[in-house]
Length: 484
Image (cartoon, rainbow, N blue to C red; front, side):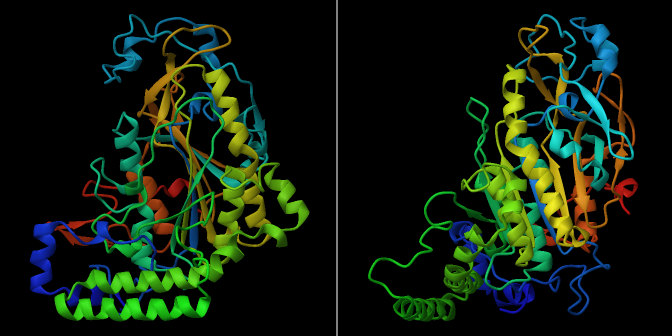
């Protein structure tokens, strides 16, 4: 297949009814991706033009802090809260907000000021917590958005929402949309790669499901390929003992012939995707070992990423891999870091989490900039929602916990098309409500697509009789205040 149009036109009437009845298709196939996606099947298409407008970014790296980092303790300084320590949050501020069952039964909602010091950094004097000293050093290269919001109040629907544009599972992820719309710049690596990182907070973390990087109702080859930290980065990547490369090629040719015969019999276009995936896996046998071999990295670069950089699975290691994948044309890399759900013992856990990511985040931006790649690479950092100013559980001067808070949280962006040294959006004195420049998660996703050359209103697919898109049917706006 050369285009998604081929995929659609090759689907026979028999196959349509067989898929509808049996529920087969994308979920049954492997996750390796092809390189032939274009806009040809979307309402946006005209000819073979892959972009709706000139893109600022060729690729994107999304650093996702799963569990929701506390904006009050990291990015959204609220010094007036110190005078309100242990006083009840005014009802006028909460204004009847729906709460989670974890705090809705509390007798009171005492204000818990952050114990962490904030200081100004960079030419713009951006305030950053002492927990992020390395990221504070790159504030002149990033845009901080303090006015993000979402409707979702619990983790799974909130992460599903920001990743796929819908709180209900089954929709394509952001990376899958980008793979579908833009394809890959490297035929030997997937266009969408996922890296799951280890974390240091001493507790179980929220689960992450494969559907968060899934293709949903898009062709299965567009779902993210998750590289493993132990063993083969991708299952069965290595040849079995006693099987040479030539023998593997012969076996693959035979398997492809069987798949071709199967396709001729039933006309299932997913069979073509399966053939492409096997071919990608064969090519990855050579490209992935080169990708993960850090022996060619200069000592000063490894040092910049921190002491964990050579430990597979660490956030530092994954950030360096993300830069190496960006160099090799991977369109979208997403790094997940779990453990940010501090309902209690925030002052014990949050410093550990920041220690995992702070140096590597700054190093990634610096590394891209040194190589001249920050100009055409978009970097995004953030979680699924924020944390409450009021304390969950016991409150003391040295420790507290915070519940989920969807009304406001912070993300930052850097690189292609982003206005560096920017702080956008304002919250009230309690970091509870947005008072200036609200940014919905739909707006964030629309802006990411825009920077990659895609008009979010024009990238859609037919599904269940509807033109479905990442940003849904409600109005979304570009966050123009952070665009250069």
